[in-house]
Length: 130
Image (cartoon, rainbow, N blue to C red; front, side, top):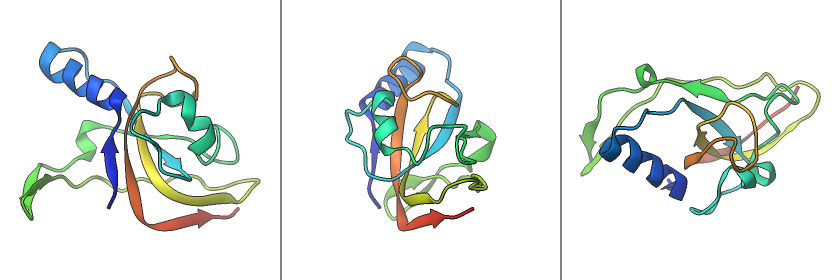
């Protein structure tokens, strides 16, 4: 499954781990196409299913308590995460969802409104209807 730590995510990891800066709040967002590693929050307007707060869509917060302890699996460290629910879709069909992103803002799709940390490809594309 394709996934990537964005440039802004790399910066955040280094700031939190090496410089003891505050670990930011994190929110899951739904994407309709794969971002590039250099993409920022400004690109979300072209990749996020809808702007947060429209058509029943909002980003969903994920906290440290939502993660399981890391464990070695097939030579890589992995962690499980709590299941999160989006929606329900309201006035429009949600486009085919292909990826999930992790960002540091509950709203906003502009540079300066938060950081785009990482993305993970979904194993299958999903759609939602009202």
